[in-house]
Image (cartoon, rainbow, N blue to C red; front, side):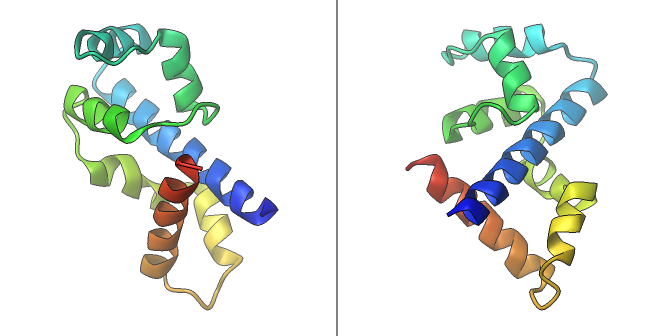
Length: 117
Protein backbone atom coordinates (compact mmCIF):
# COMPACT_ATOMS: atom_id res chain seq x y z
CA UNK A 1 0.00 0.00 0.00
CA UNK A 2 2.93 2.36 0.64
CA UNK A 3 4.05 2.01 -2.97
CA UNK A 4 0.55 2.99 -4.19
CA UNK A 5 0.51 6.00 -1.85
CA UNK A 6 3.95 6.97 -3.14
CA UNK A 7 2.78 6.75 -6.76
CA UNK A 8 -0.38 8.70 -5.97
CA UNK A 9 1.63 11.52 -4.36
CA UNK A 10 3.95 11.72 -7.34
CA UNK A 11 1.04 11.91 -9.78
CA UNK A 12 -0.73 14.58 -7.70
CA UNK A 13 2.46 16.67 -7.53
CA UNK A 14 3.10 16.35 -11.24
CA UNK A 15 -0.46 17.20 -12.27
CA UNK A 16 -0.40 20.19 -9.92
CA UNK A 17 2.93 21.26 -11.35
CA UNK A 18 1.52 20.98 -14.87
CA UNK A 19 -1.44 23.16 -13.90
CA UNK A 20 0.96 25.73 -12.44
CA UNK A 21 3.09 25.75 -15.61
CA UNK A 22 0.03 26.20 -17.83
CA UNK A 23 -1.40 28.93 -15.57
CA UNK A 24 1.89 30.82 -15.48
CA UNK A 25 2.40 30.46 -19.23
CA UNK A 26 -0.77 32.47 -19.84
CA UNK A 27 0.07 35.04 -17.15
CA UNK A 28 -2.74 34.09 -14.79
CA UNK A 29 -2.36 34.36 -11.02
CA UNK A 30 -3.57 31.80 -8.50
CA UNK A 31 -6.03 34.40 -7.24
CA UNK A 32 -7.49 34.90 -10.72
CA UNK A 33 -7.81 31.15 -11.25
CA UNK A 34 -9.58 30.68 -7.92
CA UNK A 35 -11.92 33.61 -8.64
CA UNK A 36 -12.84 32.17 -12.05
CA UNK A 37 -13.42 28.76 -10.46
CA UNK A 38 -15.69 30.36 -7.85
CA UNK A 39 -17.67 32.16 -10.55
CA UNK A 40 -18.29 28.76 -12.16
CA UNK A 41 -19.62 27.36 -8.88
CA UNK A 42 -16.47 25.68 -7.56
CA UNK A 43 -15.81 26.73 -3.97
CA UNK A 44 -12.03 26.97 -4.06
CA UNK A 45 -9.68 29.55 -2.56
CA UNK A 46 -6.32 30.84 -3.73
CA UNK A 47 -4.78 28.81 -0.91
CA UNK A 48 -6.44 25.65 -2.26
CA UNK A 49 -5.08 26.39 -5.75
CA UNK A 50 -1.60 26.75 -4.24
CA UNK A 51 -2.00 23.40 -2.46
CA UNK A 52 -3.18 21.72 -5.68
CA UNK A 53 -0.15 23.06 -7.53
CA UNK A 54 2.26 21.52 -5.02
CA UNK A 55 0.35 18.25 -4.67
CA UNK A 56 -0.98 18.83 -1.15
CA UNK A 57 -4.65 18.77 -2.11
CA UNK A 58 -6.62 16.26 -4.18
CA UNK A 59 -8.17 17.39 -7.42
CA UNK A 60 -11.68 16.21 -8.20
CA UNK A 61 -12.94 15.50 -11.72
CA UNK A 62 -15.25 18.53 -11.80
CA UNK A 63 -12.34 20.76 -10.76
CA UNK A 64 -10.08 19.33 -13.46
CA UNK A 65 -12.76 20.00 -16.08
CA UNK A 66 -13.24 23.60 -14.94
CA UNK A 67 -9.49 24.24 -14.70
CA UNK A 68 -9.08 22.89 -18.23
CA UNK A 69 -11.76 25.28 -19.50
CA UNK A 70 -10.47 28.32 -17.60
CA UNK A 71 -6.86 27.77 -18.65
CA UNK A 72 -7.97 27.15 -22.26
CA UNK A 73 -6.00 23.92 -22.38
CA UNK A 74 -6.70 20.23 -22.84
CA UNK A 75 -6.46 17.13 -20.70
CA UNK A 76 -3.30 16.04 -22.52
CA UNK A 77 -1.50 19.15 -21.29
CA UNK A 78 -2.70 18.61 -17.72
CA UNK A 79 -1.88 14.89 -17.60
CA UNK A 80 0.69 14.12 -20.29
CA UNK A 81 3.22 16.77 -19.32
CA UNK A 82 4.12 14.11 -16.77
CA UNK A 83 6.47 12.69 -19.37
CA UNK A 84 8.80 15.69 -19.22
CA UNK A 85 9.08 15.63 -15.45
CA UNK A 86 12.36 14.41 -13.95
CA UNK A 87 10.64 12.67 -11.03
CA UNK A 88 8.27 10.88 -13.38
CA UNK A 89 11.13 9.76 -15.62
CA UNK A 90 13.05 8.49 -12.58
CA UNK A 91 9.97 6.57 -11.46
CA UNK A 92 9.55 4.99 -14.91
CA UNK A 93 13.22 3.96 -14.92
CA UNK A 94 12.56 1.88 -11.81
CA UNK A 95 10.25 -0.34 -13.93
CA UNK A 96 12.26 -1.05 -17.11
CA UNK A 97 10.06 -3.92 -18.31
CA UNK A 98 6.89 -1.84 -18.61
CA UNK A 99 6.19 0.34 -21.65
CA UNK A 100 5.52 4.03 -21.04
CA UNK A 101 1.96 3.79 -22.34
CA UNK A 102 1.07 0.94 -20.02
CA UNK A 103 2.85 2.59 -17.10
CA UNK A 104 1.17 5.95 -17.63
CA UNK A 105 -2.24 4.33 -18.04
CA UNK A 106 -1.71 2.42 -14.80
CA UNK A 107 -0.76 5.57 -12.89
CA UNK A 108 -3.78 7.52 -14.14
CA UNK A 109 -6.11 4.65 -13.22
CA UNK A 110 -4.53 4.36 -9.78
CA UNK A 111 -4.82 8.09 -9.27
CA UNK A 112 -8.53 8.08 -10.10
CA UNK A 113 -9.14 4.92 -8.05
CA UNK A 114 -7.44 6.18 -4.89
CA UNK A 115 -8.97 9.62 -5.26
CA UNK A 116 -12.33 8.05 -4.43
CA UNK A 117 -11.25 5.80 -1.53
